[in-house]
Amino acid sequence: MVETEIAELKSTGHMQPRGTTLADLIDRYVREIYPLKHWGRSKTADLNRLKRELGHHLASSLDYKIVFDYFVKMREDGCGPVGIGSQATYLVGVLETAADVWRLAVPVQAVKDVRGALKKLGMVKKSNVRQRRVLDSEIAQVAAHVERKVTAVPIKDILSFCVATSMRISEVCRLRWDDLNETDRTIVIRDRKHPTEKIGNHQTVPLLTLAGHDSFDIVKRQPKKKKYIFPVNPRTVSAYFSEAVEQLEIDDLHLHDLRHEAISRLFEAGYRIEQVSIVSGHRDWSMLKRYTHLKAKDLHREAAT
Image 1: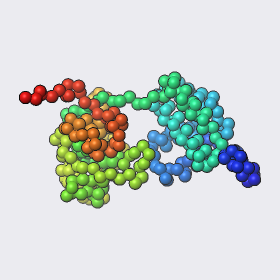
Image 2 (image 1 turned 30 degrees about the horizontal axis):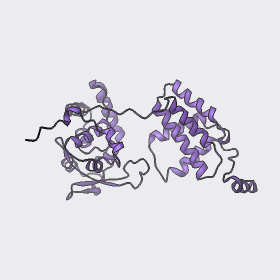
Image 3 (image 1 turned 90 degrees about the vertical axis):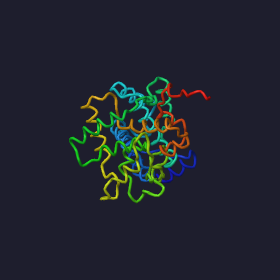
């Protein structure tokens, strides 16, 4: 077997994945790649579904029809184009790793061809750009609703802090006192989300006052009882927020909209693109503009006299 594999490597550069299933590849991918490049819960869930639905197939037997039929069934079951696109991308990623890193002869191109066909058929699309703006009155309503039920979570401060800083709730809840620079009024966000980097992607950001929300003052009034400034599970905050929005019957409001709102307010306050990107963590305008929902009427300026 070893001699055969050596011969295959010499002749084609790849070995045949004898007896290896897609589930085996996914398990190895998680085992070896995740410690080097962490990813979120959504990718983990998608990989688990791929393993559950397609994992029994031998890696060498995966072909265009098997993969295409799987995604067609996903659409028939109600999955949208964004979800289908994510799974297709993750499947390509697993197979590319198997081919490029582990030197296994797996059908990468066949799956890429499926993804291309799905795009042409409109079954894979980017998520729609949200235009939802958030009112301070809505934030106050949600905070008051949560505070009537829960007193241990500083929900009002957390929501105001999100609007003042544009941080994701996961970033807010892992801010540390040790990373606060009171002289510069800055703080370090550890392992900030990035398309290709996460672990070690630390970023220093300013604690600004935006639309009446003073993020530095909010931090200073938190009790120093633990190493985290807001020692709350982000899922707990998200659950409280969603429950409040539903019970208050506030239309189409999501916790992540606070990040959108913060970035829009930064532009409205006169900050330039490169300045906003320091706060938001975006590295290019093409990504940043989808979070910016300025109104056409706001572009009018008084004529110079």
